[in-house]
Image 1: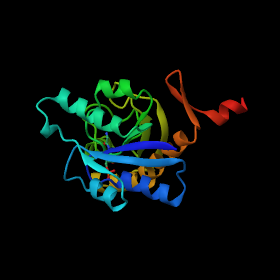
Image 2: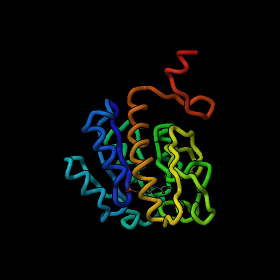
Image 3: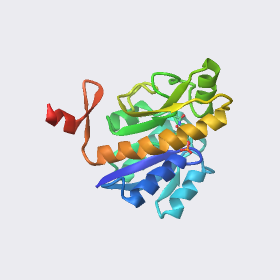
Image 4: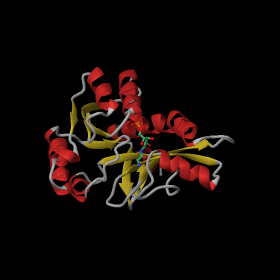
Length: 213
Ligand code: GAR
């Protein structure tokens, strides 16, 4: 059983998608051990509680320095003895100590087709604003492993979504979530939980396809 910690900051619709797919049985071999938010008012914490999942807040506001906060966040995750850390709308910059503690064991969902519209400053609605500003006709979402760069780790899954004339950032965000994020995030967890993927030379490969070769 893959034990996961889900890190959130806001509404938690990606968390909800993971919970739903586990309950439906489309994501197997997976247990959410804890949901951790940096923001005590995040609705994602309520979603966790409604499903009897431990929900805790570790806020940078409660610590004197960023280093102290980073250490406490890592300590909290380690106390739940998880195999995988899932960043589901988590807007905290993941510190190096966490990447070192969980090499290729942290995944993130990003609301664009990486390497477009990613890196420092690209998060949430800002990603969709930038995509509309550039006039792209296709966007989407990406799930990737987290390394010590911003949105630079090995890509696990991507799904494209059409941009429609008249889209606002909010309308586009909803379509990208519904058509891409809520599908590929649970799917990536299921692949990891069932040993279907591996990282080779910095890229994700599908283990079954390797066996076919
Ligand atoms: C999602 O769109 C996710 O892709 C984005 O934040 C939103 C969280 O929504 N994450 C990033 O931009 C990370 N760079 P949720 O709280 O409803 O899941």
